[in-house]
Each structure stands twice: as structure tokens, then as C-alpha cells.
Length: 74
Image (cartoon, rainbow, N blue to C red):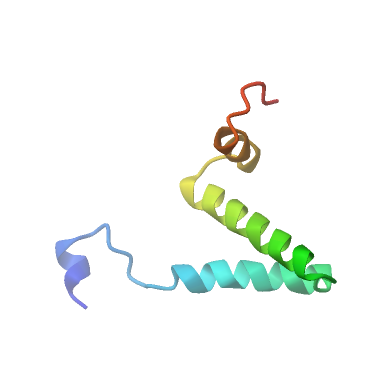
């Protein structure tokens, strides 16, 4: 519990996963669920990509282009 005094880069909380799950729940509530299994998988995939880009502090579109090696991004 006192590790934060020695290592100031350690967050005071460990709810990073909870915050990511909260974003997914908000999206699910707004979009009124998905209809098919493929839709659920696609939604989960895109939410993972969005959260990863957000955590890295980069533009989501640029992150996707970088992952697929697209060179002519907007």
C-alpha cells in the first residue's frame, strides 16, 4: 500500500480494467445491444481498439492505419 511513496508512477488505484469495462457498458446501453454473435464480436473488437488508442494517447484512426500499415491516411 505504501509502494506509491517509493514509486510515484504507480497509480493510487487499480481500477483501469473497471474503467475500460464501464466504457463498454455505456456503449452497450446507448446502442441497445447487438443482434448477432458476429455483431457482439465486432463491437468488442472495436471497443478494444478505441480503448487501446485512448490509453496510448493517439488518434484512433491513425492507430488503425498504423496497425494495417496504411500509408495514405487523412
